[in-house]
Image 1: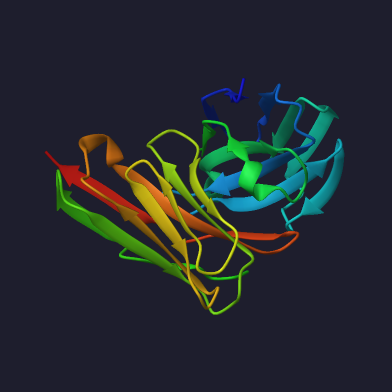
Image 2 (image 1 turned 45 degrees about the horizontal axis):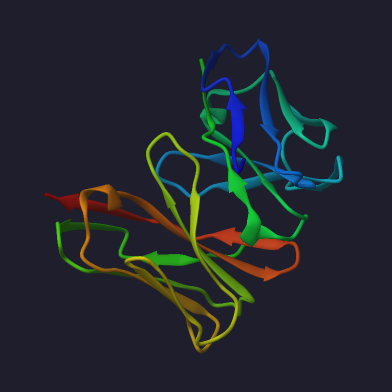
Length: 114
Length: 110
């Protein structure tokens, strides 16, 4: 199973809402990632978890709060977002933290902030 | 962050034609990767390159790690409609520095 799953596929939220994005993998990968991708732009790295610990935070605003409950799950909690946060949010996993060549991406959650 | 410039930005080609695109940077990279992204999906790894001068194929796709280590090239031979999508290069500068290129959008006209 080389699949990374993400839910929901689409999410519309207001600026005062609290919502969460979920990501799951069962490949035994020890590193998991959140990326943000605006339309027609490349993915931008947000967070990296290695062995369930946050190892990289690319200066992401605190309205995005990641969580890694176990080695298979990765969440991204959203609160007080802005319309400019609307984007495709991609989750990925890899064997180890710096093994980008073994990185598998999920299909993404399309987020719209009203 | 690092800028990986891809060219061309977009391509419109006839089915059956060959495609070439490249990715350049001002920095020396240790690893080059090429991905394809379909609409509504995440990127999928096509080819990984690890050594300067390396030439690697995956079916109709061939990619090369530039000799200077500052560039990489992707060729697609005999394009088909399902080749449509956005192609991204990506480079690993050192252990924890990984960057995507600006992308090349490919349209194949049947």
